[in-house]
Length: 459
Image 1: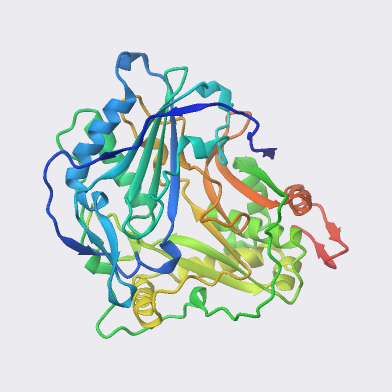
Image 2: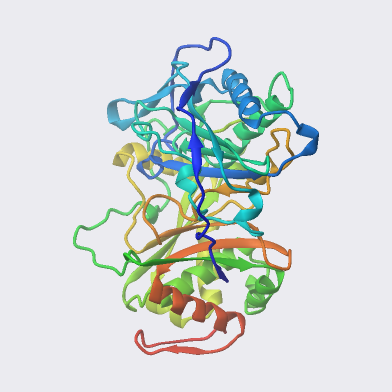
């Protein structure tokens, strides 16, 4: 468990931001987002980043020019991305397909790929310089829906960074778009998977009727008090879970949970260790929100090429006392049940709830959000220089508040073993307790936390 490499400092020289519009005229029309897309929880910008090595076979080709031209061609097919969001009655979001385009920034950095170190993982040093926030561009309404910066490196590698309005697409959706840009950059005349809008497929029913329990959208009480991790002095650490760590944790599972997924296992482990580390009071209610991809839940399936949001914030709830005093299997079972709750009917019920309750944000108090992008495919995108050395989130967290969320991303340890990297942010002292707790768990040792009056054992 190594601290993230944030000591590297370098300079980035950026050209004036420009607008890249579709290469050909596109329809001017209004397209509604789905009732999953336009919930309050998704009204933010999400940053992504990819690092590419120099490829001798591409000598003389400029990644900035290649990608800029490919973007213009791809936007002919994905022309809603070139539009602007408007808000209608009932807070309903609509894309006006204006053809205005996305923001594009050309840049150069006086740093090599090697200087970032062997293990690329968020948070990246100077990442704000690699994905510059153009003033006035970051709003949800009436602003560009995408910002892209391509930064050349001294080693002739480059960095592709993208900021997306999350209401437009989820991880599979934006990967589909990036794959299309890669295909066009490599000479294709059209994407191999054509984009499908059809957001009506996830609109609320008429009349809307909530049929499932959605505690993730409980209404927050103004005077609710709960331990929060926000602190002026936050520590950042990337936790690696390779085959050894995963098999160690799995060994503690009771028979009926031996086949639990790696996501369920790691989510439960992080949630439990984090709750202990924060000295959360035993009576306080704690939640973990699992971002569950629901694409496979639909029958008939959603059409190939659909690039809207198709996931749920499924929630596991308990008290801190029960979470920390019970074996790890207790937390795994809660996470597994939360994930298994997500069905096609569940998604339709969420759409209905959004219309009935005014598109609320998920319940944030005492909540920890976990998103698994290990298999999203960010690292598979090829603009002509091969697959990226790293592709995925630019930050280790979802949203703007540090310490209340995390990603599970592909990673390698110092031995070159493949596994899952989980970037964690906690106040410094809580981070020390977290690391101690996790080490003891992986070594099957008992640790006593006197302040919280918890006696914690991996078994």
